[in-house]
Image (cartoon, rainbow, N blue to C red; front, side, top):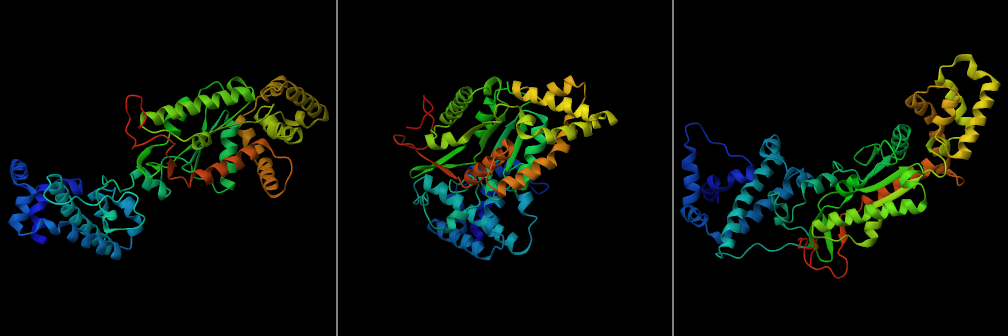
Length: 416
């Protein structure tokens, strides 16, 4: 076997390691000439190795590595690193990686001979419910290997968030991530809050390229997902595209249609129940964000604190006028900037958001522990948490009835 590995290395070791290293003085053309003129069967013949034993020896090496490697649970991720990465390992983990390299050399030789009909191909492991040594192949292109994005997701390292929350204003961008962190969702790779800078902006691009599932191969009646799935939550003031429940649903359906169209370009079709789960729309109610989530008694002290107007804001007259204008703004469903502007106050929105957050945190703690009226932004955070919990468990989606075959786009973009 050692002689066979030596003979096969000039031909295939570079592809296994992801690099070709030539000692000084070696003519590179001689290497390519060697690779072109000596097929696998001849190399094995020179070494005296029977091709029938390729699979058995490779499986033995993989099984030994599996039983000895203290980092075996990390193999789904380690196999995607290059030689420059995993060669930094030491001791048993490094020794086990070299065993897998040797096994892969033998298995690539087996695959080449099987293509020519000289020996039986390796078994199809699709749908196997138990581990076999071949599941540990180092080759990241082997169909049983989880993609890099899938492996990163399983280790909590995915660059794709489980939920994207699209918000309108700067205050929401400060408050919502902090509230989510109280529920254990502090990592942007868990939930990413993105500001749209206005309720007129269309979220179509985010939906198409951030939410469309990345469909992998089919196993039985499900399509495996090659990347962790993402859901979209849109949280806006009730205006423009989101002014009425009917408009909200119309926009949501348009986004779902765009996602389904992108899935069709992959040769897949998203089942209706899963598709419906991918886009959620939330509005604060009739009022804009600050007026919907805070009472006058919470807003007036904060406005006074950050206004920089000194003793003027401490007067009963000033506070009464501020309360009256806030009431008028609520009645007209205006933005909070309207009453603040009428009072001729210039406020730093970031400073106001920071000052309002302690009241919001108290509401979160109270409303999560007791039944009763729910603040709209607290309701949103609860909803995002539930969506995160559900979507984190999804690794595949059911193939809808009437769709056959693997994801291979045809002229209409749908697998047949």
